[in-house]
Amino acid sequence: MILTKAQYDEIAQCLVSVPPTRQSLRKLKQRFPRLVWESWEDFRMRSSSSRRYRAEPGASSRRSEHISSQSQATLLSIFSQEYQKHIKRTHAKHHTSEAIESYYQRYLDGVGKNGAAPVLLELANEVDYAPSLMARIILERFLQEHKETPPSKSVINSLLRDPSQIPDGVLANQVYQCIVNDCCYGPLVDCIKHAIGHEHEILLRDLLLEKNLSFLDEDQLRAKGYDKTPDFILQVPVAVEGHIIHWIESKASFGDECSHHAYLHDQFWSYWNRFGPGLVIYWYGFIQELDCNRERGILLKACFPTDIVTLCHGAAAP
Image (tube, rainbow, N blue to C red; front, top):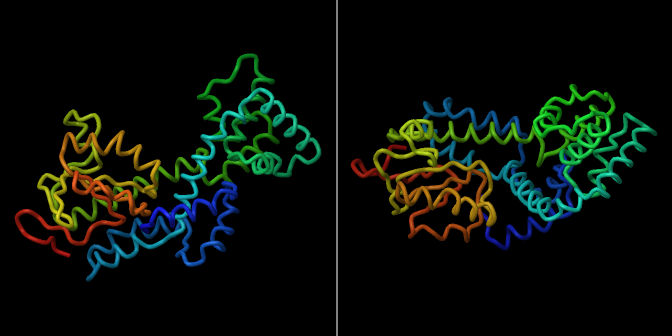
């Protein structure tokens, strides 16, 4: 899914007033009905089926069509990135002592009236803050009140990962509701993002093997002493759309301006300096205007290229 900057801005503008909860996805479906929607589980099953496709006639073209389809994950990636920008802009106001005491008192008042109601989740939506981050504020404030020493960050993180360990049952349930309903922050989202990223690296590995391309992966490169490496280094360079490629980086996200410029600064130009020109695959698409460094040695694609040319054998077998 490759969007122009104007198209991306239109989508981003529509997401401004949408809270970061899973219930909000229904609204996004209604607003963007032309997108092909699928669940996280459908996406996981589709991505992990690459081995089954490998032996079937025409497998490469069908899998490329699947991978490049406009999916729920694409819009969710844009949604998540835009919301994270919003949180960075407004983070400070939610962490003043006055705000924390106000939120905590409202939480106590709410659960005092009805402990089973989604008090924290509704409070987070009302003040336009991520549910998981609101849960962290209230949990930390609760522990400060009930513990002799301030809770450490590791203790807070552990309790957020397993709310059943929170010593207050009502708060444990409130935190749990926030964690499972937050689609942008929290330990559950972190696990999903890590799993999706890993699955795409496996998928890319399978595609490279299918094309009979020799490569070194990130673990092999680190074993050789490299501290900052792309996902795969090609032992024999290839050509894609007339550009020589020495390395490939997999990004299971949408490439917007903010994230792409950060990746350029922190990763891609370092790879270019060390290994030469390379390819970045944004599996959920990118803003078209960002693909402006091809002549300088960084090519962007939204799926695995189908027109790979090897230096010795011509076009790679489909």
